[in-house]
Amino acid sequence: IRTRESSGLIVLLSSQHRLSFVAVSLEEGRACLKFSDPPNSPLSLCLRDALNDGAWHAVTASRFGSNLELSVDMGDGAGQYGIIFAAKYSAEAGDSSPFLTEPQLLQVHRQEGVLVGGMPVFDANTPASVTSNLKNSCLDDLRLDGHALPLPPYYKFSVFQRRILCQHSAR
Image (cartoon, rainbow, N blue to C red):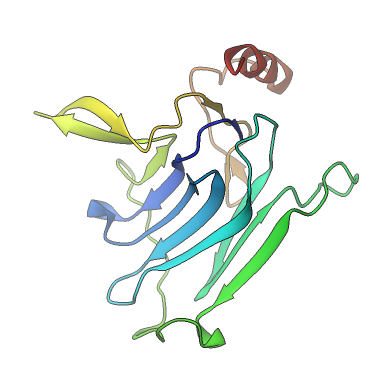
């Protein structure tokens, strides 16, 4: 992600009617990971360092049962990035209420289960506005379980071309 925004939705994966979800967002410029699986209490993990400095940052989020993991700029093996922060949340750590039930697999809804860059607000079944909008931001190489998701309107461009377009739009 490349942004100067202080808050907004990066990506949301949800079940039908958003009863259960995993979301990666920006809050006060910091990357946050949220997980909700009723009847359990929602979990939230925010990193300490802001990433709304206009530079490119690699954000990785994972969920393993009741554990959440969120990292920024952990590197790709070539040593291009330093570690800003890597955190692991465990419900067994004693810093949250225990789970009532073991978290289930998230069944992502096929039509409304993936949102990127904001949440649409509908008026008579027509998008009227967008909340949690990352309008002045660029996303590149969004993956779900290792599979690249298309990011319109740039999906026809190469990664290099998308970065050039984002560099000009972020100025």
